[in-house]
Image 1: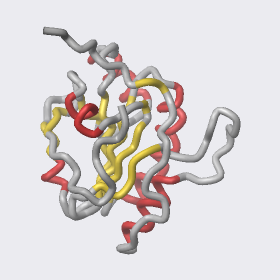
Image 2: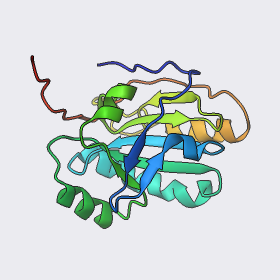
Image 3: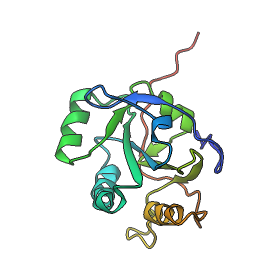
Image 4: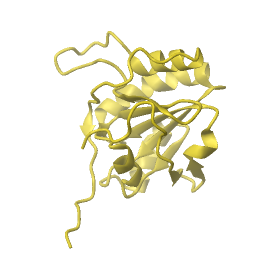
Length: 175
């Protein structure tokens, strides 16, 4: 499944609960840049990215909202809560039936989508340029995208290939 949303198009609206049941709607976050991180509690790539992403939160506090979206069908609510607490993730929302993952075409965990202040998709793809052959990042895309957007510029890079663990979906039911 590839990305469904085109860069520059309006990002699909959604409403999902966080780990305490509070609802988050994309439309309520208009005016801020929003980072959607399709995330997994058991993916080592997510664990690596979580520590790097958390380091940027204070710097971005006023203008950027980051939502970790737990969409894996095989992860229990208890596992998600435990790992989110251990990693001190501030806002994890639950996409229990992969509806939002499917809406955006998320493929991996992590898979990032950055929505600009006006609600348009500005970036989709990986956190950085690590590959299976190059284990050290030479570019970290999300901070670069955020920096461009805070200066009202179009990001230099708007789409990259996401990498990580496969997003686990429920099997399709045949009729």
